[in-house]
Image (tube, rainbow, N blue to C red):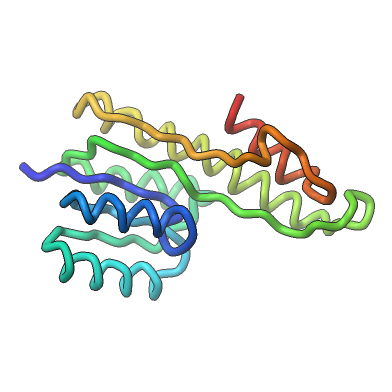
Length: 159
């Protein structure tokens, strides 16, 4: 039975780059992100170029019910690597000038979504004796002006 690497936040940035790297090494992929069009374009490219199986799923890691349903649908697949990468940074204003909804979104994605992916991944990884890689940011170690909430969420990841 083929094994898969699952990558969250795979439609751009580090998630996309990670998908490309794993594909170069012949790994089958399960790519999750909010932007289905980008995921599908990446999947088409990687599957043709590297002759691998690529599954995509439009999914927001903050939607715990959808995340649970999706992971439940993977029970017949062997997933031996999960790259927990989904995250975002919004705004660079001083905290007193920042939009409260930006802080709520970063906390929901970068902390709650991060935890939900871990919770859903563990049963699959215990079965395959696989690996969970939680990606953070240098911002979790070194704060920057205007990054109060983002840096705090990434410090949580490092913690």
